[in-house]
Length: 637
Image (cartoon, rainbow, N blue to C red; front, side):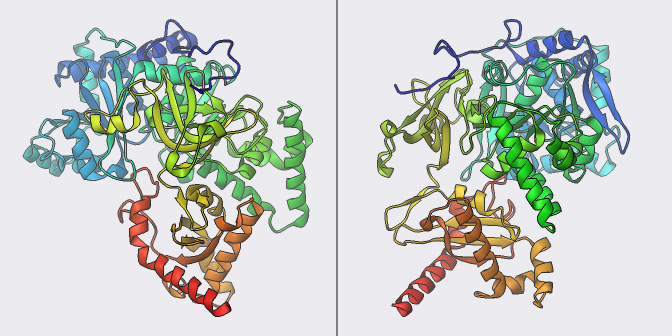
């Protein structure tokens, strides 16, 4: 069928587990207790102090007490749903461990879903209990009661005495408030036997926002999660031990972070939580000194920009940085991975210090990373750096770059728990036989469908369990997968060329002037256009130095002003330097002072562009730009 599998296996059989004794999340945690010899498990930092730890056994015991109360006091039964609406913290994970002990199904909620989506989720799942980390979130949930009559209980983390006004509002809504400490205490006095799940039992419903419509609940079993984690860990990553440490800051509501923590528990590792403020993230890293660093391109871009800014005023420093990256890259190409070279001491020591000085494995995912940034990160960290590609419907990872990889611009090979193939996309003229098409995946990590949405499931899941990802990909010469763009985002220009807008946006967002960018085109036109939201932290000082008003709205309103010219010139410089073809360069742009946001309907709850809504919002602006270009072209002729 043209599918491909993990290249280093003697068999095409997929793997489902790392260890025979760990086929569920519950079993995986029990293995962590044994591996760590009841060592430190969950770490919390208060203020500027050191991390304070709960041991593996303490976590298991407190989770059992909570689970006893959820089932015995709040009346939950095996297979029922528990919502959690919180930032990353120990109680989030304790709730998950409790759910795994008693075969309950965890349903993460998050701020940017909004009240309407939360109401839909609570109603669709008939959830009666949600665990929250603040009174503000509890108050938000009370608004869902009318649409979700089954919703009856809110458990408050770290709040023993909620404000009287909140208690009154909850009573009026018919919702009971419970202090976390009170439920754990009740469970301690009324301890129940655990009721662990089977591998094929549902572990979580992970709601994806999508760019249109209501959120869809991705049904993931214990087997889905354990197989995906096994696919990444058992064959790809170096061995992890109880001596390793992980900082949890990526949202636990998303499967990338959940799988990372599952991998930590399976190996008895320490997991510390950031304090909840991204601005203090590096301070938390320096206090915790993690060895495993899971991250996203946005943070790596920031690190890269910080280093570039530090050398930008000096030709010597800039040349030294480039020389250091080149030399370390050559070493990597010879299979030498080190972080104790002369170049590390001279150039990269600040990056090591920034992240605590002990990082020995880096994994990046959730979005594409630029080739130059990846080359820098590999050189700077001097350790294995892996890039993964996947989606929630396949639990997390579908492909991952290989150990010791030095080539750029791809997302690696299929992980050992799934097979990947490309299928024809006739309307775009793409043929799998030519090595290009829609990416499809089948394996132990692929979901069983969207919760109570059979029609949506049928759109993406074939009867033989091939999942259509909606991404256009191509195979590279060395057998790795390269992602071109989302199928529904590609558009054709009048000259017949297909354009991948997200690739262009990701590249052009490297411009110092750009906070956000939306690139689009029209099948009747020959040019690509852009809408740019300028970064005020860069643009306003620039305006002052050029004798212009320090007023972002006024600067953006000038249709052919100096700011627009400077930004367009910078975008096209970056595009040319990074190999964009002529038809992929923005012929014109419009500046917009208003940020794209969830509130104004231009971003999804996971901060992805709502392209159809952006297209509608800026339809008249694109028409005006195309009319202007045609007029200029006619005048020139």
